[in-house]
Length: 145
Ligand SMILES: [Cu+2]
Image (cartoon, rainbow, N blue to C red; front, side, top):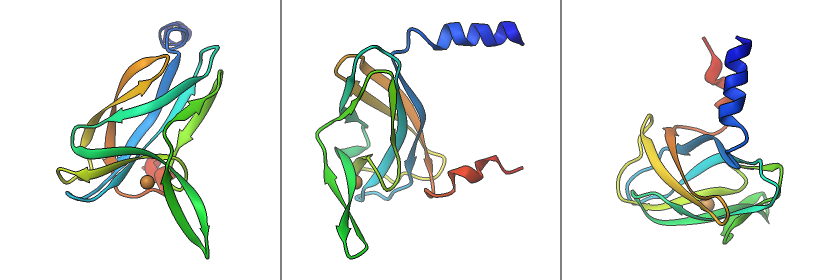
């Protein structure tokens, strides 16, 4: 067990300057838009920037932030990029920053696994697989038996 743990640490840590944790997307219908979420861990000594996302089934992709539009309304607006400072992490999640997958060319159904390419200024291209899930607020309920 200790050996295994040590091996895991060796293989997972130092080389991965940028690590993507728990990627997922919300289900969506053809022609509509949906959200892509994940946590970015920057283990390097310098800041890095996520500036572009590619996902073939989306006709248009933007990086969004959510803001308080007053009157209990939430708005979304495009931000060109996300900067992750050195030795820190940044979480994209519902109600906050997210990747907007727009003009979907197909339905994204529950259980679908999408291949997404993230572009970072320093770390370059990182490929991830994001599974489609139905709703946002009960990620914590996944561990039920
Ligand atoms: Cu959005």
